[in-house]
Image (tube, rainbow, N blue to C red; front, side, top):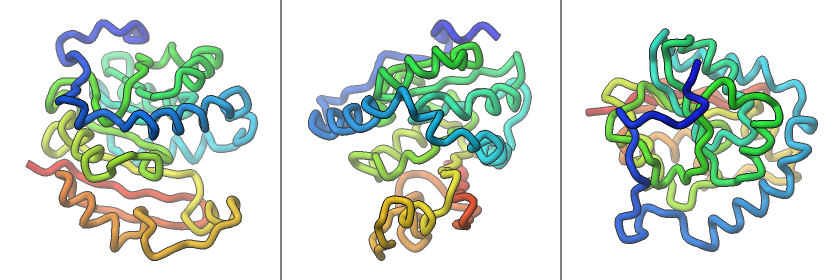
Length: 223
């Protein structure tokens, strides 16, 4: 497999900064790292049965052998075995996360054998334009500092016709109930909000499912 060591110069580049416009705000980055850093050690044990749901979500991307795919906001890397199986040994799997404790948990679980782990902000990815065939993003959108800008950054690194899967192993209502919240009309994941957000960021929403057992928004890179 070989790409668990980051030697991807043919399609990688230095992290983008653009005077700080693309980076997460310092406070937002701190909050994200603090939230997930405190939970990294027990994250997998809290959700031990999500593997099949992640595999089904990955399957929606329609990846083929040899493809290049990014797990954006990979956490402990629960999607990496399914992503590696989809692209095969000739493909490339990247996994980016802002929280070092989550990446360390992925290494302890042996998931660094499935792809390259990158400590990187999805708002400023060290990947060349159009280098990837797809992006898998589980539970990511609610944690984006600037959703329109950050989704556009994901579009930048994906070739035209490539796909983005915004995924969660349970649907919006079930997740809100788990957290003791109610759904609100301004929820970014609601289809009336998400469709124009994606369209303005270089994506066309082609499939939307919000069920008790999963949330999936599948989009195609335009251009």
